[in-house]
Structure formats: C-alpha cells, structure tokens
Length: 395
Image 1 (cartoon, rainbow, N blue to C red):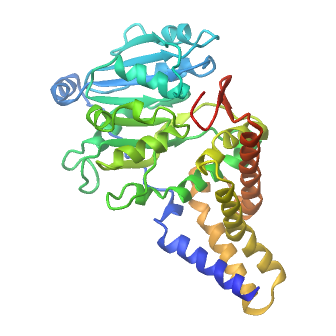
Image 2 (cartoon, rainbow, N blue to C red; image 1 turned 30 degrees about the vertical axis):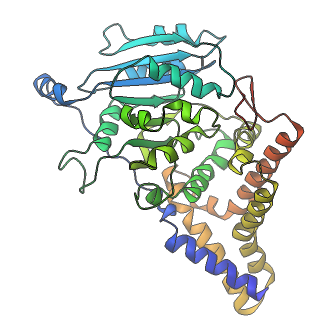
Image 3 (cartoon, rainbow, N blue to C red; image 1 turned 90 degrees about the vertical axis):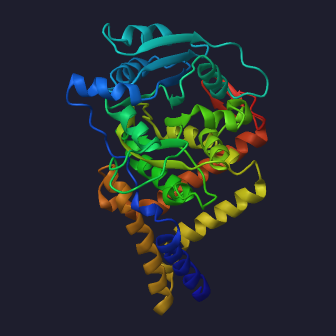
C-alpha cells in the first residue's frame, strides 16, 4: 500500500501542477458591449463580417422558441441570418421557431426541411451540413436548439475569432474556430449532483489551456456554440469529412486544429435550457457516447476504469485504511482532488462540500460508461431523438 500511496500523491501533484491548469475552470470569453449609438453601429457595420447561424433541430418544441428569439436579438453590427434545419420534427418545431421571430428583427429566419439522411451520416451532422450549404457568409455559427444567448454573445464570439488591438486584456492571435462550454442547466437534484462534475471531467479530459495552445495536439470543442470560418470548413473537406462522428464537436476541433489555431473557453453569455430532471436522464446522456469516446475498445474501457479507481478511490481508501506516512499521502491526494473541484463548483454556485463527494460522483460516471459498453455489445448502441447510432454513424 505504501507504493500505491506514493503513486496516487504523485499523480495528483502532476494533475494539479502540470496538466494544463484544467482545474482553474478558465478561460471565460469576455463580453463585448454593443455600440452606444446608431452612428457607432453604422460605422462598425462595413467591417463586421456576415454570419450564418445554423441551428439543427429535431423535436425541440420545448426549447426552440427561446433559442431562436435570443439569436434574433443579437446586438451585432453586421448582417446575420438564422438558418433552422428542421430534421424530421414531429412536434411543430419549425412553426414554433417562426412564431418566435420578432416582427422587427434585424435578422432573418430561413427554415429548411431536412432531406432524408444518407447512409453513414449522423443525423445532426447531416442537418448541419444542409444548413451550411444553404448559406454563403464567411463566418458560420453552429448553435444547438437548446441554447439561449445574451444579446452580446455573437459580437463577443467574433471578437475572439478576429481580435482587434486592445479588444482583449492581452495580445492574442486570430483563430479558425471559437467554441464555448455554455452554462448547463443545474436546477434539479440530479443536475446539482452531477452537472458540475460533468464540466470538471470534461476540463480534465481536454484542458482548455492545452486546447488553446497551438503547440499542443490536444483539441476539443463544446458543440452548443461553435463559431468557425467557412475557409476552415473548406480546408478540412466540409462537414462531410466528419460525417459519421458521434462526438462531432471534438472531432471537428481536431480536424480544424491540424491546420489552424482554435479556442475553447467557458461562456457567461450562453446557457443551455435542456433539462435533465432525473438521474436516469443524465445516465443516458453519458452512456450515449462514453464507449464511443473509448473507440469501442474493451481494453481501453478496462484501462479507463482502472485509472479512475486510482485517481478517485485509491486516495480515499489509503486515507482511511493506511497508517503513518502512507496515510498522509492518501490524505494529501484526496485533498488535492477535492480542492481542484472547487473552482468548477464556484462557477455553478454549489457548496464547497460537494468536493467531498467526487469519488461517489465518479462512481456514477464509471457505471454509466460500463452501461454504454453493454449497450454497444448488446447491439442497441447509442440512441437520441428516436434514432439509433452505431459505431459507423448510422443514426
């Protein structure tokens, strides 16, 4: 147990000190305030690129009106239009979207009825591809149908894509893709227990500082909000180049980063309103793609579970059962893990005491990952919006 105690402490020292500062729960994209007058807005318009906002939607009656209304209200000085791709909805999603558009909106809404999905495409990416093809703006914003946006959001995203001198706190270079982890719904008991940890684990898996470092091979994006240059899409071969991806946001970011810089941060200007009222809902959300993340490999599953036990449970067991200096190593490792969760808890305004429950929360995520593998082995695969998804993207 002494060697295990040393290993867990060294591992946590590495994670906290040398793993991309993931636990800081930063950066957050700064807000760009709108022009103060009509004259200032008019002066800025010629320099502001046109933007196509593509919203794929399938049976989103509960969220689409709020999402579309918030996009229509963007205080962006350039031209922008919203392209909604109605992906076989049966709940009146398209009509609700049209009704949500203000009469005097500066933007326009174009509703496209999605065509039948070809073999080999995931449903969402086929819808996204049709929306991108329907536009011609140099900048494309991919926005999920459950995200509501502050009026400053689009301008703030563009400001990071092409920073102007003095627009940010320090000099930064332009990028080809800007993505944000939007604030997730955190209202129900299940959400309060598990959502902050979901964000924390995502940061641990893809440290944002490494994603944003052009020298690092780490690449990721959060699919709720992705702003991308059309030239970058053309460079990678369009959405067709990732057509079967189930974890489409990360796959897109990896493709783009091979030829240009990307940015991933947290958002204070966009939030998801998709509810997860029960633990089973979050279980399904995790299980849908967890085994896909492991490339459907039983070996990677075993290695992942072993690693999670080493990170989350070994320190606790050592702290409770070991003696002498080994016990103190376990206490130190457990304390480092708990403290590393505090910034994410603060982001979601949760009590610091939740940090003590991380081993139990990790156990839930481990079980959902095993459940994801069992689904795959049974042949049911991932399922979303009444579609089945297999390893070849057949959903």
